[in-house]
Length: 507
Image 1 (tube, rainbow, N blue to C red):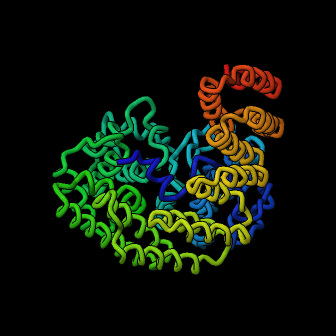
Image 2: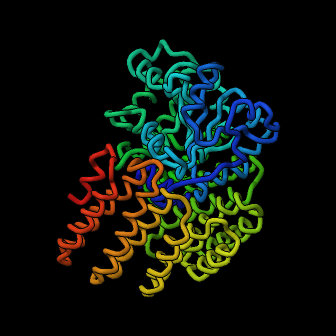
Image 3: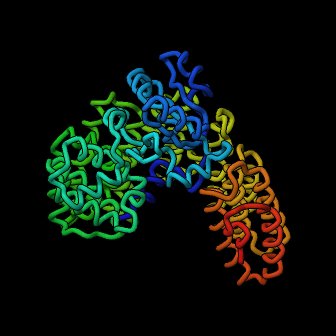
């Protein structure tokens, strides 16, 4: 089974990029926030220090949202949860901060708080201790419930975990609820620290006081594992127990959606048992989705799970015609249902992914091209168009799409990340064109001058990834002189950066 973060990124198509914009107009001061209408969240836009100052005065915890303007699950939050009156009212118990990945200091704050994926919601006390964090891609009702509990807590989640591992009997029901609601799906290693996240979750599964919570931790442990660690019988019994309880299915809806097919495979004792358990999973997901309104995007999500199950049954064979038709129908329904910009950004990538899974690349390309004319972030879809062009052998077309994506990308951190995609495309598709590779990389280095956050978080991560690929290219294409010139330019661009990793790039 794929590691959890990889499987999640595939289903959400949150490629290895990032950045985002506010869900509502920013309210820069506490006085202005007090006059915000009840129909909108009174976000403090990017000013984290000011938010903690207010938290110290008011005693409220800080609710920090970390997102990106183009990321599908971020836009799903904007289209749903952030418009929900109950959630808007709940945010009044916090000092809410909207942190956009392209804002001044955002990448440094992301590094400070160990944010790994978009979207993430973190609750911190006025002293900046983390009370909890939750994965933004989860069910809106579950998110609201988890944050309602967190609003009145002042215990750091790390301390709660330490107690759970050392003296679990001393924890109360609310403590266990916080650990169960924690965003293990995206940030397991943040809380686990140097310990194996899988080992921590297995220990929690044994110590938790309630069977439902024991099963949740067990599911999370299995999903975080790099390779199967439990006997098929154990996995099967666990899955069947969870799927038999509608409340547990809903709580674990996203986990079962993206990891369910892999768990079914782990539980399999043969094709027949695998098919039966897969059908049980789909029925349970459909029941859970019906309870939250039978949305078209949920139906599309189930189609992706069904596709994953079918591919396990027939890795190389043709998919059943009925399934292919069902996927196309659900893509069309999701496309039609997504009427505003946020809903479309949350839906189109999944729709394109679904079409490509049923080998309808032409349909996927048509959907992408149509969306370029509607989207406020058309650059987001261009790398997918580049991949389609590359797949059919159109190297020039693929590079042109990657170049257009970089040129159209908005925001300093976002431009670096899309620029890296373009240079990587050149290294892969035009490795003999050293001047073009050097020119594109120089332009990318120049982006550092526009970085309000400096060499931090995703900007640093993308440059480090590119460094490895440039070094591999140099070894095969005699690029030592090119790399030496690029390193000099990088050192000049780093300027007074405190992080030595900037000046040591490519060394």
